[in-house]
Length: 290
Image 1 (cartoon, rainbow, N blue to C red):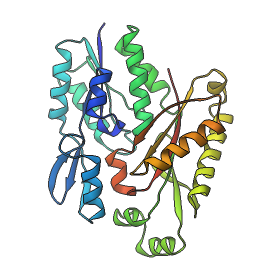
Image 2 (image 1 turned 180 degrees about the vertical axis):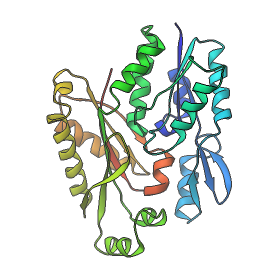
Image 3 (image 1 turned 60 degrees about the vertical axis):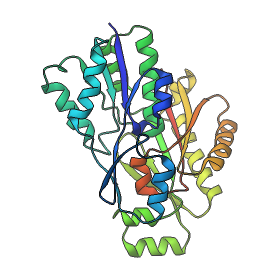
Image 4 (image 1 turned 90 degrees about the vertical axis):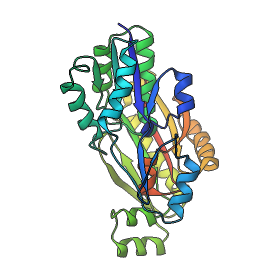
């Protein structure tokens, strides 16, 4: 069985990188002041942040299932099945919408597997890498799908938010809380443990944020992922929003803290997350690898 691997741009995989990897990446729609853009096609990271910092009205939306179906149909011309890895259903209804579409549209039924493995950004990219490896080994789509679903909770992301402005703007903080937090120079550390984006800790300095995130990863690999660590089945990654220099420094700190765990890559956070947290953010993740 020949299986095509596909994902969306929430994975952080660019169109150019997708071509190198031999996969398709569906660009996510972004609305800016009422005008529709598509991530990494008609909207670059630079243009996005330029608009965001200029206080434009920025939001993300679900892709049209019919548009995504066109990608699936094209892939099925040369493949027996498609593994499609969208962003977590805990962060968007996109996954459920596409699961229904794949299950009810005759041309896709039994051929397109929409994976709800609760990933976003750097952990979503790891799922894609795992799926590619399995497909290259000749594993059937059912087996790839089962692995991704069975391991969906075996990842963690921690994100330091540099400014409260965008959490306030998105209604995730009241103006009063945002004002106090800004005055006290609070930097929230958020977490994604398979489902939604939740608060993990509050700090005031970048160094404290990095220490908090490293300690959180340490706790994960010593408890939840203890056996995976012993088996050499874990990998680390870093993400950021317009903060590449600090991301490189953070990578070295993570490698020093966990010399027995491999490091995969540094990526910009996807725009679907970035529009809620703004520039200057720094994130790290640990996840299972195939």
